[in-house]
Length: 139
Image (cartoon, rainbow, N blue to C red):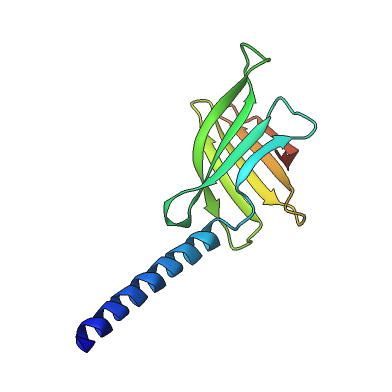
């Protein structure tokens, strides 16, 4: 009977430690400050908002939005992408490869963690380049 109680206690303790470790790891993954819905301020039609959320394996994903060309009263998604990690904890980037251009968005979390600075750089196939920076606030 004592052996049964000891085994039961060990299994229960092991399960508690595993659950606590998984919860701690999950909290570490989602505590980067990038997560949330961000809106350009003032609203910039070239890049109106970015949504950032955690995914499996501590990866972050982002979806950028801009004003639609055919209906500027609506927002159109540029599609979701994985945010690429860098050695700098407050800096990430993601990119889009279009048929006529390649676009990279560099995301910098400001020190107050309430603002993002987005540098958008586009290289067009015809050699033209366009760059701009947008400040975003958390919604």
